[in-house]
Structure formats: C-alpha cells, structure tokens
Length: 242
Ligand SMILES: C[S@@+](CC[C@H](N)C(=O)[O-])C[C@H]1O[C@@H](n2cnc3c(N)ncnc32)[C@H](O)[C@@H]1O
Figure (cartoon, rainbow, N blue to C red):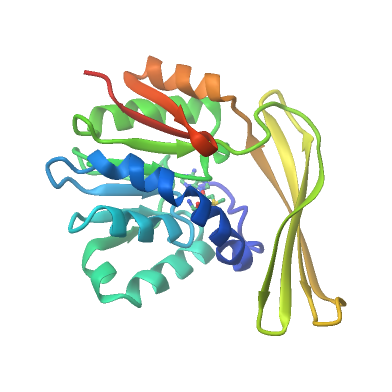
C-alpha cells in the first residue's frame, strides 16, 4: 500500500461526503439493478467510510458485500458503521487493501468504485479494468464516477461543503494546481468554526489526483472488454461486453 492521503483529513470525509452521496444515490441505485445475477458478491473498492457500501446493501438485498479500504482511519469508520448494524454485520466483509494488493473472489456480481478513480495511475487503472473484466458476471455492473478536473489545470479555491454539527460548522474547501503530465495536486482546507464564526481548528492537506476525461475512461473500459456508458453526474456504468 502507498502512503495514506487521508491520515489527517479522514476525520472529516464522512461529514463532507453525505450530500454528494444523496445526489449520487438515484444513479447508483439504477446502475445496481442488474447486479449479482447469480447472487455473486459485490465489491465496494475504496469504500471510505461506507456510505456507498450502505447504499449497495439497500439496493441489492441479501448478497455479500466486500468493502475494500486501504486507509486505516477511514476503515475504522467503515468498520464501526458495519458493526453497528445487525444486517450489515452479516453481509459486509471489510478488507484492509488497495486495488494493487486486494485478493478478490473469482466471480463478482458488481463493483462500485466511487470518488476514488483519481487515486489510480493510468497503468493501475488498466490493470484494474482487466482484472475486473475477468471476474464480473455477465450483466454485472462496474460503476465508477469522474470528479473534476478532467484535465490538468488550475482550480481556484472553492468551498464545497459547510455542515453544522452541534455548535460547530465544518467547512471544506480546496484548490488544485497542475503537478504532472496526468496529475493535479489538490490542497484541501478543513476548518471548524465556532457559532460566532471564529476558526477553532484548521487543517490543510495535499494529495495528488490523476485526471481523466469521460472520453478517456470510456475508451479504456471499451479496450478492456466492457460496454460502457456515461450517465448523469459523470457516473460511468460498464458491463462485460458479450
Ligand atoms: C474520496 S474517498 C471516497 C470514499 C468512498 N468511495 C465514498 O465515495 O464515500 C477515496 C477513497 O479511495 C481510497 N483509495 C485510495 N487509494 C486507493 C487504492 N489504491 N485502492 C483502493 N482504494 C484507494 C481512499 O482510501 C478513500 O477511501
């Protein structure tokens, strides 16, 4: 496994991801309609704190779910989420791994890889697509999404979330700058404000992000043997080409 970019910011990921998951929900539920045709397990890759895992469990009853998450801090939240729910405890296995070292079952009923593609280099993506193509059951979906920027560019400082919890406001913002042929570096700023607006805590974290355009991801998936379509909110759904 490589260095964990969420060592510090992991504390806030669940709080800042909730609204995004509300928006993604219909597209992901729809994409899961043909998942697990033979009750094969579904994998949530880079499951984070488990918001997507929870949605898979709701959308596809009964089948086992494998939640793969390399970051210890995010995995702790994920494990607590699973442990706190009787139904999830029976179905969800949490695996400490990344795409590079995970050992997956030979047959899969679906794969979710949401908000994580930018962590994979172009070479790693190709290996990942080929590996999943060999394992996915016919009609089983691979669901990924794209996040901005699609190209190497500068993204000015933007506040993307402001969430009140108790007396605190959690504010997340970020800016990106070009840092390589296919990468930008995001500088994320997380602030906790008191009711008067004063900053109680502030944390700044950098992480590299591989950019990819919708056309590129569709091409890569087609080359790996998938039929892939771009849906709303830059969600891409791919099924093994027959
Ligand atoms: C922005 S978070 C998204 C988490 C979750 N999928 C969600 O949407 O709420 C990106 C996730 O990708 C994971 N990740 C980073 N590198 C990875 C890798 N090489 N293999 C699998 N997951 C990885 C991170 O640990 C983190 O959980």
